[in-house]
Amino acid sequence: MQKLTAVQVEKAKPLGHKLYDGGGLYVLCHINGGRYWRYDYRFAGKRKTLALGTYPDVKLADARKSHQAARELLAKGCDPSSLKRQNRLLQTEVVHNTFGLLSTEWFEVHMSGKSEGHAIRQQRILDKDLLPSLRHRPIEEITAPELLAVLRKVEARTIDIAHRANQILKAVFNYAIDTGRLTHNPALNLSRALKKIEVKHFSAITTPKELRPLLLAIEEYKGRGVVKNALKLSVLLFQRPGEIRSMRWSEINWEKSRWERMSFRQKARRDHITPLSTQVLAVLEEMQSFTGESEFVFPNIRNWTEPMSDNSVRVALRGMGFGKEAITPHGFRAMARTILEEELGYSDKLVELQIAHKVYNPMGRAYDRTAFLPERSAMMQRWADYLDQLADDEK
Image (cartoon, rainbow, N blue to C red; front, side, top):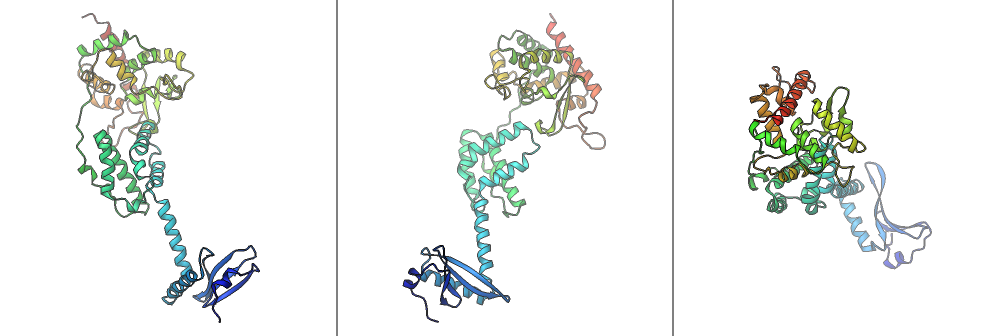
């Protein structure tokens, strides 16, 4: 069979015919005007066709090179079409296995069921500190030194966030391993290269003598009423600051005098019930007339579809003269725990349950959210009455 010439290929008419070059290689001159290189062969007793590109992008010489490579594969017992398909899948997989896409997939899987605040914090670190440098990087090409360089930039700003960013990196790469896309985790030991976090305990008022001036200051607070009532509930309920400011009206069970939170909004990822004293109910009734139209009991002053800023209570405390060495919003929890045990004689188990810490029964199982509810209800009312008495005490 006579070989094709470049001129023949260039001047081929679109008649739907084939111009053969030999060895199964030909150019298909389609009626649509396209000229397509094809290689017909047999593999495992079946006739197959391998596409080798389109003229003029692929010239005659290039088509012959691809044809010869395919013939060599065939001689070795490999199917050229199957190998081409595998390579295409591999290239697609590389494109889709970038850090950005993998982190999105990890977030959707692992943030399901986590508290809203936790998910927001994780996304913020991804968006601000990790994705700008790593979004388009194929995960199998990312190295430990590259990740450390990213973390060093974060560390220069804040050591704590650098460690949190590293935790996210480890989790994302572990997810890649679990889903069969990596065999090792380049972020596994990076925490050892970062500066150590300085451990600080939350400041807290832990004696009645220290507590009374705070109660009086809250009562005399001249700022926004929403913030004043958030301060009151911080003392009365001693829950986490983020849980106080994101309290929703839908969580208030007026009939049973309870605040009922679902696990996905809890740091501990467990449902939790907080009994409400008559004093707390009075505060909520007052708030309902102001913010009852919002989803949140304490909405953001600029946007009622969002909760109050996490700085509101802290700023109010500083404005009343209580520095960070005296009390922080988180310190209300330690304050209540200490005084309830040391002054009012409640068991640490009962207090820990109310604080939403895990407490285990004699069988080694964590108590559920309804454990000791009558006792906790009595304790919360006793705590509220004690605070009233302490504030009224003239001594």
